[in-house]
Length: 548
Ligand code: MSP
Image 1 (cartoon, rainbow, N blue to C red):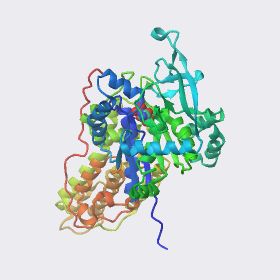
Image 2 (tube, rainbow, N blue to C red):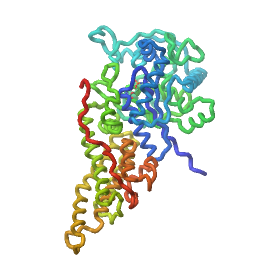
Image 3 (spheres, rainbow, N blue to C red):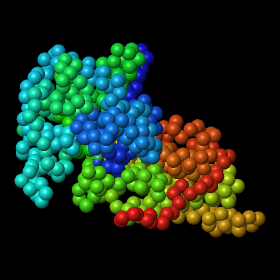
Image 4 (cartoon, rainbow, N blue to C red):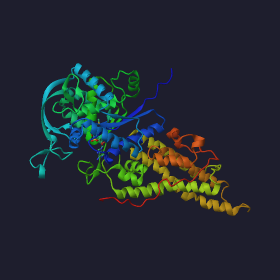
């Protein structure tokens, strides 16, 4: 029997509302998704990385109205001018970009809900209760907070600090309450379904508190997917949006190619979400899939918020920073590195320009970039840029190779646990150890002694012949490992390093180097051309930040 095809690692970001342009909170999720999927690709696994935009609902409709254009025109404008370009700015390598207004989505969504209706999972009823347009969510009275100041006497959404609106409508309902026990059984049997543990606890407590049926249609506006059996209603935007993860890979498609894609890709391996939208993904979404009889995603991982002044960064609170404000100065590699390393993935974190500058200079410019240029410069100076033949490895070389092996093992585990910050910490043990190795082995002194002893008889000051070559080749091997391990995190710098090591010729493209190959030295052949290119991370002055 041939081996079964390896499973596709399928990861998604939330689809972003097009009511506004992206800020660094949105970019944070996309970068995390890109780092994790690039890591899996580096392992040489099949990967599918989906992102996209959420275009229906009142929030988008009202923004379009306020700008005197149709919602479709507004969505087209924002997608083309902001949401697609930001992926390029962030250096994200998504495989697909879904828009919820695309026919491939709307048609498949209609097929899905028609099926649930036919199965008796949906019924007509009436709804009365508070709704937050910012969240596009029905709230329970207990969720709300009392307004103060201009909102005195009103009930507010705790996330948006804006008044909720009272809804009283005829709606269609999804029988979500029927799934309470099955959901609890899922969380019990698959603790990995909701991560991290704090998120799982929140979801467990919520579902144990009792589930209500969910109103899934609206008939007071028309910017949404029409309900197929009653076109006076449009589908509730979250029901529509959650389905993107399955429609994008071919759910309910008639096309055999799409059906094959679905079979090869579904269920999703990881849905990455901000903690603000955890319940939709960990409660409503699996209940919808259970009702349809479809396999469930393996993991919903909720990361924390980027905070400004202790509050979630958001455009509506005017605390949004555009990714380009940072990337224009520091570059996309530094942006990716900083947010993935400085904030424990799963927890909240505050962004500060000072912290970013300090880490850039200490870790990227002095720690890593400088290491790469020093090694290339020494191979240039002492060997004319041609990697020499190394002598025998001593204890210091073996110890450094051991650090590389441990870094790979620990980083692999951390990526599987979606502890991205820990993976980077592990990789950095090799940066630090290589710097220390050079400080201790002092190749520049070895070179000097080599020069002095030329033509003289051996004596006690002699250093083993070929020692300089051994030290520089070992350092170059550590850099080769680092290029592989940092490729998912800082792709541009890793590629530049790969080129400076001249590794492409003997070893092939950086993208085809497996992660576990980074654990071993002795791979770059003698004779490889090493060149000292431009600094990977030139030292930067602090940025001048407008309004800071
Ligand atoms: N459209 C819905 C998601 C539907 S998914 C089926 C939505 N969109 S959103 O644009 O408002 O936000 C999407 C995601 O952006 C959040 O879940 C989160 O991942 C990210 N973030 C937005 N602001 C953020 C911060 N301040 N900090 C970190 N992430 C943030 O919700």
